Image (tube, rainbow, N blue to C red; front, side):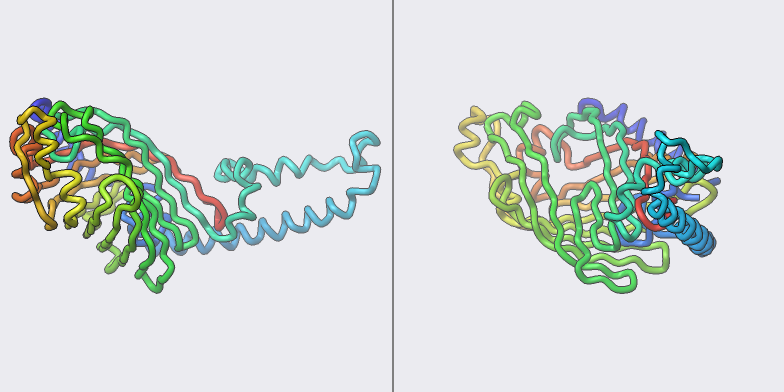
Length: 361
């Protein structure tokens, strides 16, 4: 399998480094949020962090009262020519406008995003990042390549949760339980992605719509299940994903979690990605024999993720992932003759967190 020996070495090195960092407070984004999203924002704050947040909220309320009083004073003095620059100022105090825009070193983002806080009356958390990933060029391939892997994690008012698996809308939620609609855009698979796919045609970009249910428990475990159906274009099939995640440890600036995953697919989804019609076989020059597969469990897998806090709002997120494809799908000529049922990926992200509303921390 081309490229895989080097990959296994990289994966082994990743596992060793993940174990080595077991001497270490999670990434700020992970500490900040208490929700069931499978992301760096997974497990929520510790009790100490909750107490610190309450103290910070009280300080911010005092600041808000102070600023409100200033704004009222400025509004009352607006028509007084003494405070207009053309007439000179009758007040020798420092320019408080600058103070309102930036409130010290720990509030470096408020100046830039302060104008947006009225749009987000409750705290909204955003983490963005990018990094390389070494992965198969299509699901089931034995050819590996490096790709850019941009990441966005958003939690808005305990309602919208967005990560690399789509957007979930927690219409119904109580305690640590959420359920509601879920959407995802699945990227297209081009037959030009790999010579093994020649003759099969493209599977277009798919807009998937469905629902999700998720919960966290014991402050260390999270469960999420999603059922979605492709609309209009692409595979037009159904896929059901289930995830279970456990926080392994949290020490100093480092936390490590592990996840298990399983996927079930419907007939149309299976036909789009794994079946080969006689016409497709002919277009491949007979290289790919006809093959038909029905609905069933497609694969199971697992991953290990580390979150390493860097300063206050930056984090490093190395990860490794493995998937095992079940027999019915691994037997398609696309995988049996030109691919591998064992699928690996390894990579890392450099993440940056922003917080709007709330404490602004």
